[in-house]
Every structure is written in structure tokens, then in C-alpha cells.
Length: 212
Image 1 (cartoon, rainbow, N blue to C red):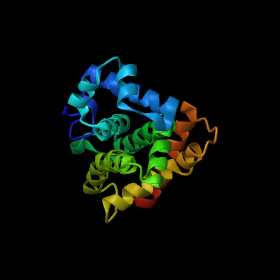
Image 2 (spheres, one colour):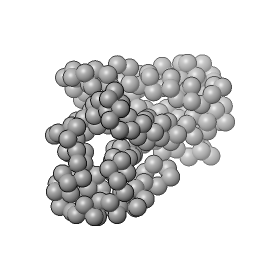
Image 3 (spheres, rainbow, N blue to C red):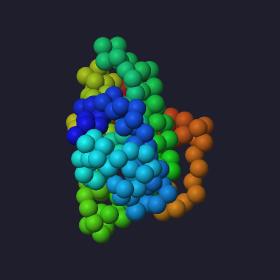
Image 4 (spheres, rainbow, N blue to C red):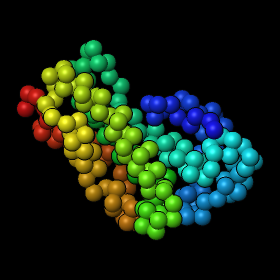
């Protein structure tokens, strides 16, 4: 089975053709939600089922790769650990927040999360676990090194990186995701996303900033 993403959760391990296949999966999820089959993916992506099995294994493998592909679009922000200062930290946090808000408010993320919630409730398969492990938890693991580097630099003060990340995650997301999942026609403009990212970052620094 092809390695869908590298260990850092980015898409560098995917070929352009594999990315096209995963985009086809996301498109089918948006259109049909719970009706995803390997046959449907093969038809939409103009490839054989044999190719899908070779690249991704079974249906769960394909779904895992799709979730990781979507989650990889959330970047932790670029920073130089050796030269991390207050300005660079703020910029990185704001970049992550804006990026995450843009991804979770997309039609593809909404559709994917709705299907995952439905499957978790029905015990139909382990899609809920796949989304948690390769979405929320994987994003946290990519973000926590920045928080820990900021602590080492004397910019943040916290005892547990997971707790600090969950605080930031909650400040960024607020009730946005649950509203979208429940059908609220919430539309976030780029300006609103940037404003919310800046506010969440300021609130987080007020809570965990070492110099607060």
C-alpha cells in the first residue's frame, strides 16, 4: 500500500494522481455523504479498483488517506525555533488559526465530519476513529512542537502541551464547527477568519503568555 502522507502529516508522500483520487473521494462525500463505495471512487477518479486497493488497501485505508489528505491542509505555521520571538509566535498562531478555520468551514470538511459522526453513532465502521486519529489528534501533534518551542524560549508558560493546545483549539473554533455540522448557513469571509484568528491568538496569549 502506498504511503499516503509522511510522518509529519503533510502530502509530500502523495503523487499527483493519488491526490486526484482523494479529491474524488471528497467530492463524492460532499455529493452523496454515506454512499461512498470503491466502485464509485474508481468511476469518479477514472481508475481501476485494483489500483485503489494497491495504493490504499481496503475502504478503511482509502478513507484514512482521505482524512489525512484533508487534515494536511491545516498547517502549523512556519517558524524558526532558533529565532522564535514574540512576533514570530503570534504570526504562527494566527496563521494556524486562520488556516484551520478556513479548512473546517469548507464544504468538504463539513461533509466528511457529518459522515464520520453518523458512522460513529451507528457503529457502522471506524470512520469516527479515523477522523479523530488523523484529523484532530494529528493536527495537535503538528502544533504542539511550536508551543513547546515557545515555552523553551520563555514566551509561553504551561505544564502540559496537550492542555494548552486544547485551549487554543477551543478559542479558535468556538461554536463554529458544531453550527456548521448542524446546518447553520454560516459563511466566514477571509476578513472574518483573519479577525477571529487574531482574537483567538490574543486570548490564548493572555492565558498562557509567560509575560502576561
